[in-house]
Image (cartoon, rainbow, N blue to C red; front, side, top):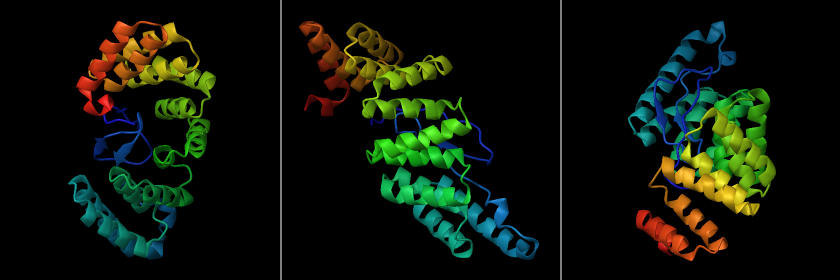
Length: 258
């Protein structure tokens, strides 16, 4: 995955006072912070303790939003000492580990959040994201499918399942999903890029070229799209255009020169 890639989030049943969008799976990685502990953990006898726990959670959120991750983690762990199943604290810890690229730890936290709150779409999508980033493509696809079972028009899950299926070489379904994503968001360069890759794998070179050219039209600094386009040109025998596209890719991202 590359750092050019981002995708907007959607509204969920929890409140998110700050939506720090970084989304680096290609399309769906949220650094949204969950503010409420699950209502199922609250009883009348626990009211004062729960209020104190909520205050800890909110202080953790403030540190989290300020980028003070270590302080936030300390507060989230204090919440979990009181409520080991607090889905919000587990989810927010997952977000920190995700941001730090500690994906196995993030996976554990998202799974813990889902044990308490199995209907949480945001936790399930982010679980799929960190599975994808660990190259666990089959289980990642399963998580995205679960989201779509609950929310069939979820644009983030549609996109992420599409790109995951490209990795799994399930290109027919990937193309269907990516086209569906484009119907929802027709000017997304990343979607055109992955559509181009899927079409290229199917040897549909004119269609692949058109998709990659559209990705570049929408994002002229999309280095990976230039590199993919150079491969299409090479396959079509257009060597000059292939060299030009490869040179542009290297200019935009020197790592691609290697």
